[in-house]
Length: 123
Image (cartoon, rainbow, N blue to C red; front, top):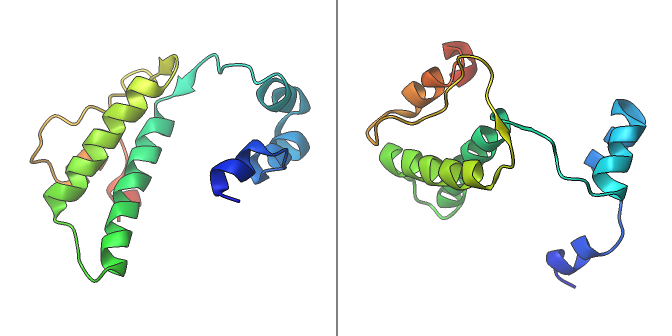
């Protein structure tokens, strides 16, 4: 059985259990039982997913004995971020928040700093 087939089967994920037990049972009901669409999506989620995709690509390259260049990692991040933003329903930015990658030659550090993350959390 493939992972896609398993995901179609009824199951308990960590997120579902955590939402029910620790967050809000009504939120669990709307998200997992009614499968209601989110009213808003924080801009942090697409950013985090794109960042994770770039790091995952680098990790796979390392497993294969290779390494991506900084420009390749930033390119993967930028492409994935664009896909995630376009797919996110009702994207919500905080006041003054902007996650636009302004330059294809930007370093990952400048991308993080432009997003409002501190130098400490970028390390």
